[in-house]
Image 1: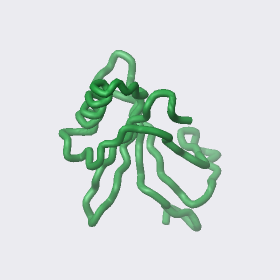
Image 2 (image 1 turned 90 degrees about the vertical axis):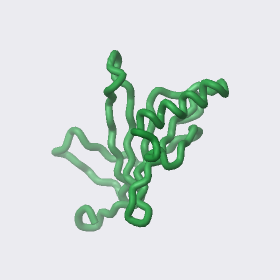
Image 3 (image 1 turned 135 degrees about the horizontal axis):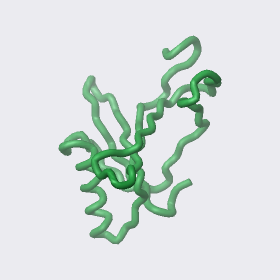
Length: 115
């Protein structure tokens, strides 16, 4: 329970958007699924989103088996390039807790196929 009546309802995930001119850096946005809308009047860096959906994406299960999530992203992009699939720049890492271990699934949206 996060606070009275507010509960986590899914895995934590984050997006990584490239920072222009900085290959080793990116803009991170973190997401925490919860059971109902909240108002955060005194927290300008936080907001509630009623829904979040990625329509079509290439997915790498257990991306944590790569050196890091940037390496996993590159692996997905290499595959997409070989297959002629255009991808969005932003990618998402979903953190899954399985039997006490943390697994990472990487989602890279296909261009023109999302919201």
